[in-house]
Length: 313
Image: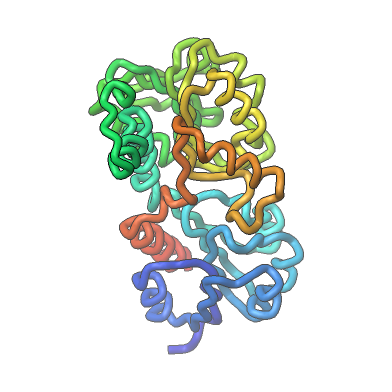
């Protein structure tokens, strides 16, 4: 079979994708832990790139790849690609948000249950020899109101699962408020969420109008003390506002899978200090950007990308 060109694999993928691309006639170069500087040489003669968050496929890097025809993004979050410039060069861009939406939704619910039922806190206490029942009385999700902001693949997956908890589900989506399932209440604006929500969960892409979506003004507009869930992008949350909200009690709990700067060794001193303070609060659960990183999601994202790339040829 004649080679269709070289593909740089710059992200962890399932074998279904690598084997499928090889069968389709591509030559694979795998560098999962590649850095931005190394990419310039490796991408120079590539036809395709598979990436996640490790590479910023900006104008300079795209210009360094004159043979590039397509980019596959494991997961969602196309902010890692200069989409406009890629399209102007005829480079097709594929994402696989449907591949990890279930994993993220399950993770969000897992963190909420952990927080509300004080599972991690009480588990640590028992391991330390404490048996505190009254202090660890839990709170139920049933009857609570959650505001889901962003109703793409992940927002929809979360809402489907929350039906089982008999919650009131409010949904706001800037781009698609027309086709809402019967078990949610669609909102034309954020006001119903500000007025009624006990929990706010973000499922939005990172773009100019979503940076620091959760800020001082948002927190002030919330009528109730509330729990924040962010499994989307770290920069959606203004960390200073989050810390202030936690200290005042307006934010009574937070479930975070993402941080403004990741990983820890790339954080500024300011954000690292705030992380150190926030992570030790008992009403906060933080995980290291693993919500969409399940074994099953890796397969689903890989299979989704393979199908889209091969079908589009």
